[in-house]
Length: 84
Image 1: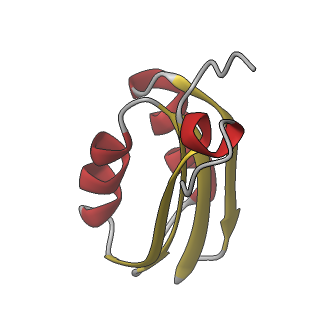
Image 2: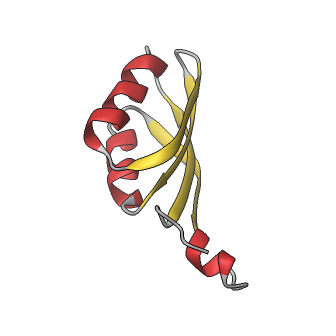
């Protein structure tokens, strides 16, 4: 299996005046990846993104508020039957 982006990155952000459209735009302009999902409201946003650089996603999201329920799964390892 050929995986374009290795890490399935998911997290929640708690903050104030969060703007899912602005966050989506920032991801599109600054990060290389796919399968982007940004949903929520002004206080809580859920992020789902496939990327090779999950640390950049976490670093950016931490500037928006408190990040939690962070999951970074290695889809390449999973495709080989290993724990991700």
